Length: 60
Image (cartoon, rainbow, N blue to C red; front, side, top):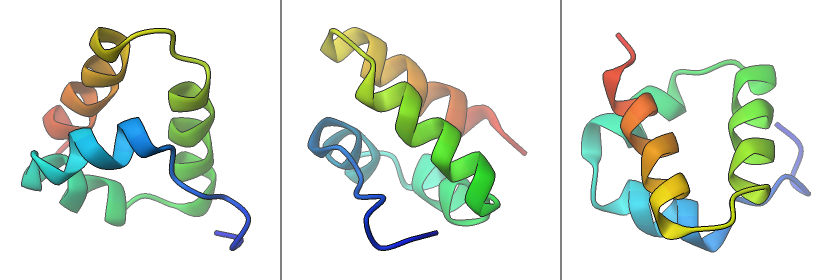
């Protein structure tokens, strides 16, 4: 993943409280990570951001 692909602060905060989501994110391909970051940047609420993290947590 390129350096300019910074993680939105809200996503970083939510993932810091969810070890499983963080582990799953780290195992994703660069393209998958890019898609998650794009989704996080387009959220309008904390609830939407939490939903993204919950989806990451559920991945196997």
